[in-house]
Length: 147
Image 1 (cartoon, rainbow, N blue to C red):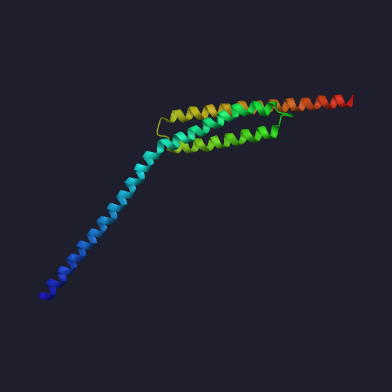
Image 2 (tube, rainbow, N blue to C red):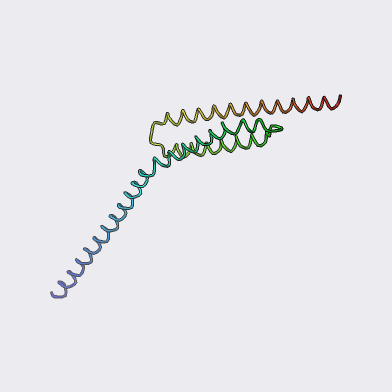
């Protein structure tokens, strides 16, 4: 009888220890999950504003530097095209990030995306016009040289 009481008590202690360990594991997991969610909520506005500011800076750079590129000698079309392409690609990356983290209305992102697409189309038209101007300029120079 003494044998059964002793091992019954040990198995009870083992069961209680097991329950405590399970409780601690689940509690720790819950704390880490809540901590991640709190960090996400705390960092979210900063990430969204960071991406928006990156887009704003790229648009400002294009607005500032495109006239300089255009006025430079020989209309460096490759440089202009490279700047425009890089800027548009970076804007698309920022839009993808915003699409994942933005908590506001999706219409806001749709409007921003549409505006950036319109800007890209217009910049492409400017690039095509510059290409035509460069071609006609070369043609007129070659004509003058032949005469």
